[in-house]
Amino acid sequence: MKALTLRRTAAALAAAALTLAAAVPAKADPVKPPRLSAAAITSALNDKIQTPGTAWMTKPDGTVLVSYDSTVTGTKLTQLTTETKKLGAGITLEKLPGKLTKYISGGMATYGGNVKCSVGFNVQRRGKYYFLTAGHCGVEGARWYQDANHKIFTGAVHHASYPWNDYSLIVYRTDVGAPPPPGGSVYLYNGHSQDITTAMNPGLNQLVYRSGSTSGLHSGRVTGLNATVNYGDGRVAGLIRTSVCAEPGDSGGPLFYRQWAFGLTSGGSGDCSSGGITYFQPVVEALNAYGVSVY
Image (tube, rainbow, N blue to C red; front, top):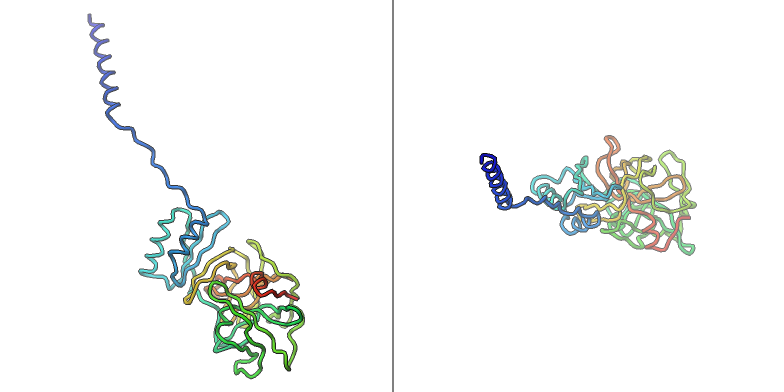
């Protein structure tokens, strides 16, 4: 009788346990939202963020690096971090040294309006000669000179594209005066020249040189492609990001390696004393837009 009672008690406990288990709802594993693609993140940034001093690019691992400079503080920084958090874990934030700016100034090299820039690459089309420089330089003045006093006329703006793009085409004077430099040579700070024969788009980690009228010759690596930068007066997309430094007046100067032309200096942050980040307009895009070629 005692054994029978124990069996009945065990059966009752088992039934009670089953009833309790049925009464407690099962817990579902949390579903993680799908990670947005770099293209989707970039599209959202293009729509939401227009803050001057910000930039972004896609990294080789498929994530997006969003950069901001020293001017992005307070509510602007709060807005930036809020919007980037909404886009998930595919974004990394980075603070840049100094201020993101176009490298344009009122100094030396090629002068137009009230600014100085640097000659990029000499180009030609059907026997007519031009030089390429930054678009934000071309929109500053219609006529360009060899001197700050605007006495020695170099040429006139044929076309300039800025913002969104950052390239312009200056046609050399055809009346009197010295002819354009031979070939597509890049004239370096030490008096030597590098003949440029081919234009192409660089790859990541490509060793590059940049020459400019203010800071001379410097080298670095390509650290990003198809970058977007928000300057104070507009956005430029499709840029090459590098670890090369640059300074005001270097705008429009050439990015190259050996005989290969890569880009035109657009802007960046930092300087050549402490280092910095510089963005370049791909030269292939400018050549295609104007139907010209290096020579």
